[in-house]
Structure formats: C-alpha cells, structure tokens
Length: 430
Figure 1: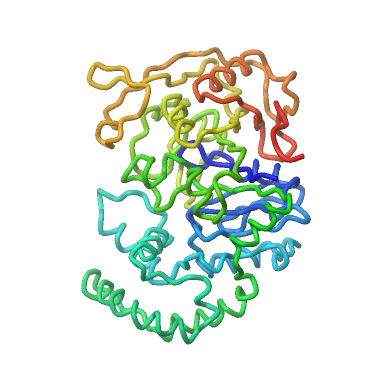
Figure 2: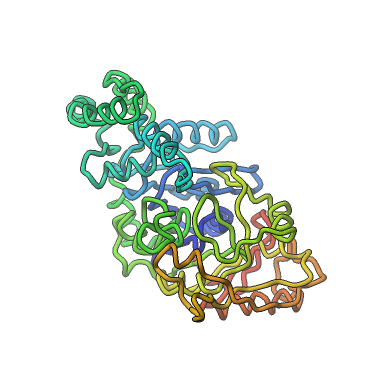
C-alpha cells in the first residue's frame, strides 16, 4: 500500500491537524517528517481539545503507530510534557509512539541562541518562534548537532559535547554577553531524557518501510506550509526545514515512488504569522471579522494571525511544486457571513500581470493583487457533511478555488470537529 502525504499548501495553520486526525483512523502509521515544536496542530474530537506540537495527530486512533522521523528536530522537554498531557487525558502514548534515532535534538543552548539572535535583529526580525528550531538545523548542517541516538550512549554524548560546547559558549559569552552553559547541566538533563524517551528511540526509517512493504498504509504528516519552505517559500521569512513533498521523502527515509497521493490543505482564505510579504492581506473590518470569527491566533505562539483573501497565484505555485493529487479546503464556514468575496487571480508588478510569484522578497512586497469578486452565500455551511447541502454560491466559490489550484477539491471542512467534513470523493485509505 502507498504513503499519503498531507501537506500545508499555504503559510501553515491550514487545519492539517483535523484532516490528519480524520484520516488516520484508516492508517497503520502517522508520521511527522519535518519541523519541530514551532508547528502546532489542533485536534478536536470526542476525547477533547488538543494542541500537538511534536506528537503526530494519529495518536488518538486505536492501532495506529505514530512516528517522529529523522527530518524533525525534537525538544525532549517539550515532547515529554506533551506525552504527560496526553497521558492525563487517558491516552497511552508509550505503546504508540516512536522517535527516529536519527532525529536531531533541540538542546537548551539552541533555544537561547534563537531568542538572542531574534532580539538582536530588532526591526529586521523574521518572526521566529524562539523555540530553537533554526539553531538546531544549523548545527545539523554544520555537523555539530546531537541526535536522539546520542542519548543512548551518554559517555559518547559527553565527548560530543566537549567538542561542541566550547564554541557555543564563546558565542554566548563573547557575542551576546550572557552566561555560558555547563556540560554537567546538559548531561543531567540528558540522563533524564534517556530514562523517559530511551525506549521510544528506534530505527524509524526501517520500520516505516517494512510496514509499507507488507501492505500497510502510512499518512505523512506535514508541518507548516510550502510558503515557509527554505527553498520555495518567501525567503528569508521562512522556516529552517522543508515542509514540501521532497521533505517528506528525505525526512522519513522512504522512496518517492511510495508516495502516491499528495493532499494539499488550503484554507478558504489566507493567513500568515510573523513577518514577510502577504499580497492579499486585509487591514479592514473584513479582515478583523474573519480573524475574530475563526479565532486566528497561533497554536504555538498565540500571536494574532494576519488575514487575507485567498491567493490563487500562490495556490497554483504551491501545486506546481508539490503536485497535489487532491486539494482540501478548510474553514469554509468562516466565510458564511460575507456578502461578497475576493479571490486573487494575478499580481500586478511594474505594469505587468504575473501568474507566478517572483523569487525576490522585495519584488513580492511590491506586487498588487488582481481580484475577482464572487457573491457570498446566505445559508450557513457550518457543520455540513454532505456536498448536496452546500449552498450554490459556496459550491461556486469552491469550484473556482479548484480551477485556480489546478487539482480536484476532494474534501471540504465546515467546522472543527471530525464530523464537520464533506468527503466529495473518497480518495484515501480503504
């Protein structure tokens, strides 16, 4: 059986958590492949309301193994806290969670460096979450990172830290003029991490491939969105990993040919957290109304999300990079109160009309959206689960988004709960 990738198709916060939770009931594995606890997935089901940052969203489905792949950077303290919260809610995590031995760890000094660097940027801050994600990936690239497997050999870890910490401490004390980090402090925390997480640290890549080879089904859980991708996003206002379809393969050690379905998750409008260009951003009462109704505040940061009209230019670009076999439209019900809706169908830049975003951030900031206006609908969509009940104008709106994205819309979300879902075409797991 194949692997199904579920990817953020915008700037993240598209509602992937609900969709993954909805589909994971028919999977053998749900696997995170990129990012860290800078991502937040909200799941609302019969067990309660949950905000997950590292544990995959399949944790609520019986018989599903949840794995954290090698492409993820893991803050052990955050993972342990999240597991304890789930345990208190009656969810046994210990038997349904694995962490790749090749996943890199976010160490305490990574969080310090992230916060200090962002503060130093002042007016030029990029909007990092301050969770240590960037510094952890930087150490991974510079070959000074610490892997989960290193927790299983504390003596070997000591030698690694003796190599790494002197440089880290020179940066902390000489550049930022703060206290250094002691090796004993890190090792004490590592012993605690080993006791708690040691039994979960395994060769995840091999396990996932064995399940696929034996006919099992794997849902690949994307974090954030393509417009935050290090290569294809609105650089430099991006994340430090690859939330694209390419990242799914490398971040979990599976072959590209095993990924047969790629679902792009789109909000019915656009949002963004932090700095960076946003051509369709709204600064009026309409934008504030959408933000208020949808409670658009970051799961991880709590920051108010910027709100704008659906951007068909970026949606088409997103599809070209990821090659979606299906699109999922979420939060359609948020737009129920509007008399009319705008959709961006092009950019105007220096007198030219563009159908793809320019690669330079300065050029993108200068782009003016070309809008197409559609009528709203006067019948609520909230909670609808059958396509035949969707108001005519809402269906027209979805159909137009489908044209702009360039692939069929097969799932429509009309509310936060699992049951508030329209399966236009059952394209997933049998």
